[in-house]
Image (cartoon, rainbow, N blue to C red; front, side, top):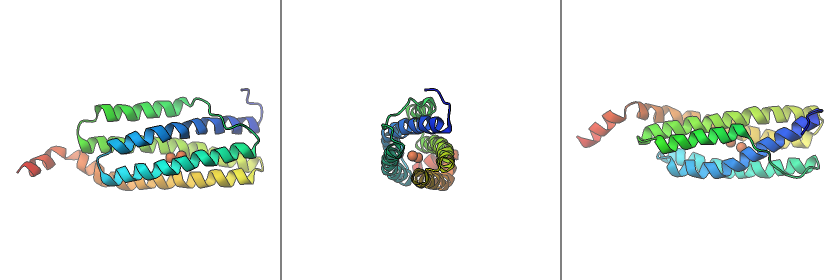
Length: 172
Ligand code: FE
Ligand code: FE
């Protein structure tokens, strides 16, 4: 659709993020299933239920601007999901797989943070404070998820760096 006004851009980006969030409701269960660290599994499961909420909030925002809730293919999220699947398919060592899953998930969160950051700014600029507030709530949850993953990455990366030694110790 032609992007002539900031309203058009807002609507177009809303459709992009709507597609991305719906895609994530299918990707996150796979990530939770394949993660081996129990805290990481839990983080993915929790974020799945948050993500379902993000879909719902976007539907509320579509209503606020009188548009049907309809997604638009997001090549970025499709690509990030593909890269995550590659980690799952190729990851042989459990801790290396977990480290890869965290990095893939953070790439997704960073994409969402960038998109929601823009949407919040545009909604405020357009005077749609209700939409801005809804989108800000989601933005806050994306940032919290990113920080949680950051916190988990310390131990998991350390374990991934020394898998062979751990196995030797276990065997001894
Ligand atoms: Fe989200
Ligand atoms: Fe997210």
